[in-house]
Length: 182
Image (cartoon, rainbow, N blue to C red; front, top):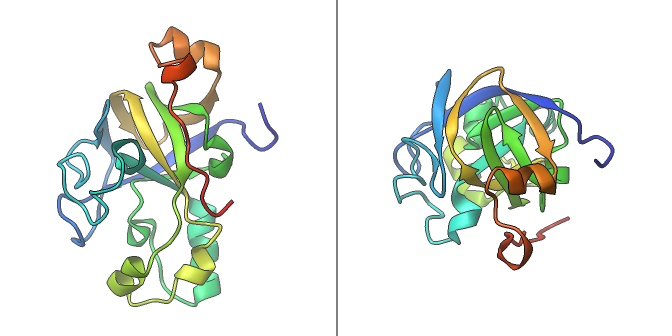
């Protein structure tokens, strides 16, 4: 395991059923293999970035400390839901999960890429967030094994061996992350 990539905790679950609609927090939800968060816009086939590759749009994660840092730097009131990310975590270095298998509760995910901020987010919040979020935007992940998750669930890296044992694709079939704005 790389430094800073120990276990963390899921502290919030956010979703919305339509692009640009307000996010709502739920205490638990189901992650669907190959789709994302049940009831969320991307799992339903919509969302502002629906045209992006399937593995890159299923789920987004952000660190609670990054949300607080962005709010302070931007001088804006900002909730985790305002970032439009699905899962909020604490205690785990999310960027280190890009290109790796990890678990949220019993669900198996793969870190596909960093999730850079966009001007769409600024339009929705009315705050200038792009600069403050450049290295704090979280990550995009693909769901390979679904499960019901709840706030308080552990978030931890998973070895290749454990992922393979859980039916994850390996070798030439293994997902390929996209490195953006490292």
